[in-house]
Image (cartoon, rainbow, N blue to C red; front, side, top):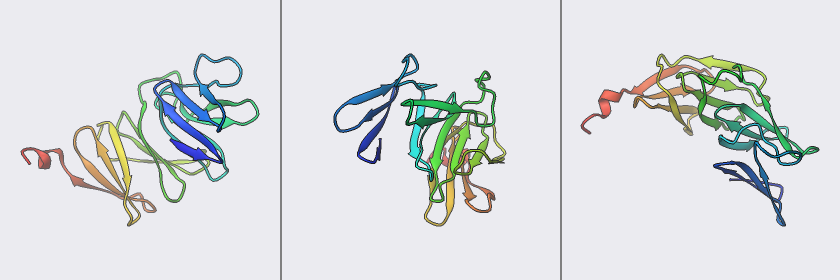
Length: 171
């Protein structure tokens, strides 16, 4: 859910919905005209520093809301949309407005707020990135499906593995 200037934006299993106080508009892949969105597989929804509503999807990258057409349109984020072998599995917008995306391949990308420039960070694993959490100390915690947890410095992008999967076994 996301509240934007008296509008309630909701991510659903079918896409995104917007409630303006009077009516609900559903954004779906099959809509023609107002209410179109490039993907129904939405992970996150946020407002960037430019005031634009951005939806992050597993299979179509960043989808930007266009006020004039009342639709969401995609921006490919460093991958060919026709290739579905590296889907986005986790996302987070940090306190500085940077967008962090975790991929099925274990890659991490840190996008500046504009989503035009990114830094790729190597965790040294091929396990799916499943979650991000920002710590108050300007660090980011990253979890993988293999049970590893990493700490990354938000400004230095230095990576430290803090929990190995075997450390959790039998606890």
